[in-house]
Each structure stands twice: as C-alpha cells, then as structure tokens.
Image 1 (cartoon, rainbow, N blue to C red):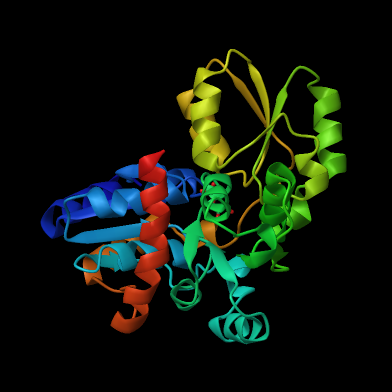
Image 2: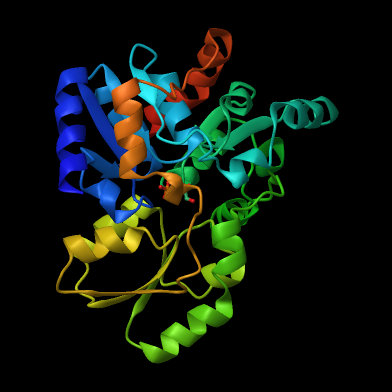
Length: 310
Ligand code: 13P
C-alpha cells in the first residue's frame, strides 16, 4: 500500500497533478487526496487550484463539472464506469421534449446531471445551495414555483418545496443509495439505540426520513456542523463513506450510520491502483465537446455567483 502511495505522490509532482476526492470515496483514497469535499466545494476547488492535471476521485458528472469549469486542465477519472444513476434519470432528449411541451420554464438542474442536461438548463445548484438558488430565481419579478422545473432529484425537490412553501415541476428521479436504503424504520431503530443522538440527513433522502431529521444538509455542511456542535452523538443519514471523514476529524464524537447498506457502488469503484494507472498512463480523460461545454458553463457559473454573493 505504501509503495503505491509513494508512486502516486511522485507522479503527482511530475505531472503537476492534484487529486480531488468526494467525501463518499473509500478511505484509501483519502490518503492520497489533496482535497476532500462535497460537490460544491470540489467544483470551486477545480477552478482555484494551480495544476495541469486533476485526478477526480468521484463519479463521472463531478469530473465532468471540473472539466467544464477548467477546460485548460486535463481531468482524469480513475474509472470511466463510475456513473451516477440519479444523473442518468434525465437525458437532454427527455428534457428538450419536456421543455417543448411546457414553454417558458426556468430549468434548475441539480449538479448531479450530465453536461448535455446542464447545457439545456438555466441554473445549477448543489444540495448545499439549492434553497438559495431557487430563492434567487423566484425573487426575480413575476417568477413563481410553477414556472420552475427542478431536476432530477424528487426528494431534494420535495424538500425545497416544503421549505420555501412553493409548488414546482419536479422530475421523478432519485438516488438509489439514499432513496432505497435509508428508510424511516432504520432511522427509528438507530434512534432507539442512541436516543440522545442528533439525526443529520442529506436532502436526497425520502421525505419520511427528512421529517425524522434534526438537520438536513449537504455532506460538506454536515462536516462543518458536527465540528461546531456541542452534541456528542450523531446518526448519519447519507452514504456511509462520509463516516470515515467525520470520525477522523472528530475523534471525541460518535457517529452511527442509519444503515451500512447505504453505500454507493459507483463511488467505491475508485481504487488506489486505478488512480496510479490513470496518472501513469494519462488515460480516462474527461472532456466535453466545446459547444456543449460553453452552454453548460453558464448555469454552473450562475450558481457560483450566487454562492459567492452569500
Ligand atoms: P453533496 O453535494 O452533499 O456532496 O452530495 C453529492 C451527492 O451526489 C449526494 O449523493
């Protein structure tokens, strides 16, 4: 293991490469990552770092977002099959067809979408800024929830609707890991075992799970919240990879997953051997056709403007 890490570190210097990793990555990836973050933090990092190469340890749409924002850098993904089933639940073709039947909709795309879908959207959001992004859209004169199409996550969409007290058009997509495995009965069971624990849930969880949570937040905000909180025990309703970071950074606190079943198989496709392979052979380059990239850049940069002004 140490030998492979040494080789990766040597190649990082040689290639002027930086490794960005999502919180859901396997622990071994944390050991070589230059930065671990949520999807928003990683997008911003991609634009800020001084490097020629980004090795993106996450799922495909995340690497693609980095490539859209930083076209001059080579973005490599250690496994080209690390996809996102939620992102695949909407295609540009389906979106175009919906838009042709419902004129003048403002399309708000969760970052978990392909470049082609982003290119057909007006503004992007991540789970950490979705409420602010939608608020900024409806603050524009005359725009109401019904004028918005939010896609593709129905659970995040429902959370936004409840919080902002609006009705939007919401795509019927979901993250299988959050939606199918993190169930209210499991939350209640873990809560019985640890009655003093606070429940922190990702907004991709089902509404019945969200209603049992003390706080609903993105993975990045969970990490920040836990660090500041005086509470000692937390039940975590999101993909279990985040527990590694939470435990590492907060050794005096206790973290309980809702279920060990909440594991994203795509995130776990990334291994140290594959990181070494792409850095050695400069392969699995993620690139987006220039015309699509330019169109997809706009909704992402609109989101980043809102984030930067808050
Ligand atoms: P975050 O924005 O919280 O990192 O979530 C990304 C994601 O894909 C959750 O499934």
